[in-house]
Length: 420
Image (cartoon, rainbow, N blue to C red; front, side, top):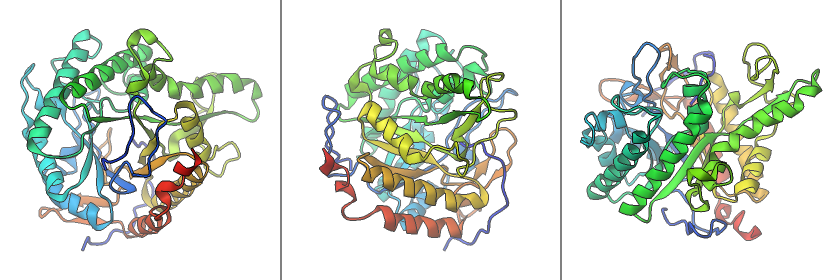
């Protein structure tokens, strides 16, 4: 997700492996094969949560990606992007309990099949059917049943490699939806409860999918953050560190290190997807428990900013899993320098032995803001016209091609393999 302030409107111009040998039983096994078909991925914003006013978002529809999926995939390929992140809109598919209509996802699956685009499918991206209570045990079983039904349908319709995100951003989802009530389920003070529930649901979803396709791969996506104490309040450092370490809680639950009664196990933590935006570092404020004054992210030029390479190194050292940057991006004129920063830091992490398998530009399309429908200029392409044409952001496209030359080197796949 991205929630930054609107920056100056940029110039827009007219748009003219599943072979990674990684065993669930041997998570440290690394291979010279790449996990994804291209180093850079494109992520299509697919949030489907409900706002306080009752309106449900549907960013796939708002960006008209469902209508122009084929054109969008061809655009990706023209830029050297062969792998995409997509969302399955559960609330449209299961409008009646236990009855599945996959017509809403069919155009996207067919477009991926036609263009040989590799897809990572989000099964629960902040939204679920109206008839379910997310806090009840039924939610867990229903997500598992839905997951199996989708995988079965996908296998009949396509020969796409089976990559899935069972529940997107468990940590952020729990905080936003149940700790501070920004969006559904609009609860307060129940974040830890929801986190436990979503971990159970993710585990049930994986087991259900494996029962249909034992070769399925899973990415567990969450933001990685840095929380620093204010230089004038060094006494806040222990609390800031406690807040920072919470970023690992859902992954620790999945792997069984925390709350083992949830059923976590090493086999469930397959691929780690780390989300990193400009907003992911801030100063802790003991009065608010969040940040100093009004929430303002740290500048990456601030002395308390933590280099992204160090954050990647910490994640890998903690879990020893292959990982990729599942979401990253910025708004307006910050897009190009941000991608350059992330790419440079990622290369440094790889040289240091961290298996960073890819970088996903997210979102790849400009979209309406969650709360106010403002035009968010944060993608590589803009809104589509009636013919499905989208204006491309020229300077970001140029930076992407420069970044591709930097990262898609023939020796890239061996950069970390030879260290183990």
